[in-house]
Image 1: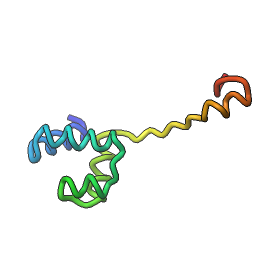
Image 2: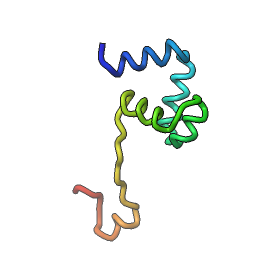
Image 3: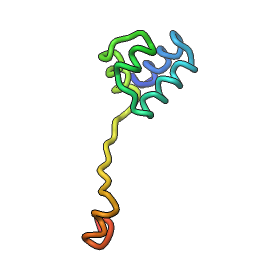
Image 4: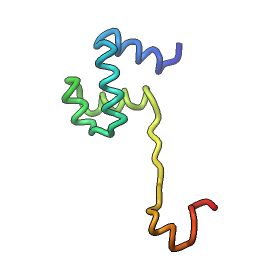
Length: 77
C-alpha cells in the first residue's frame, strides 16, 4: 500500500468517506488552506500535508485569446 493510499484510508476511517470527498472537492475548488482547516478543525499546515500526500498541484499558464491573436495563432504552434 502506498503512503498516499494509507493516508487516504486513515482519513476515511477517522472522518468518513463523505468528509474525504468534501476535502478533495474543496481542494479542487481551490479553497484556501485556512477555509479547509476551519471546516475540518485542523491547521493550515495539516491541510497542506494532506494536500501534498493525496495529490499533485498542477499550474497551467493559459494566454488570453486576444494576446494569441497578436501572434496569429495558438501557443506552442
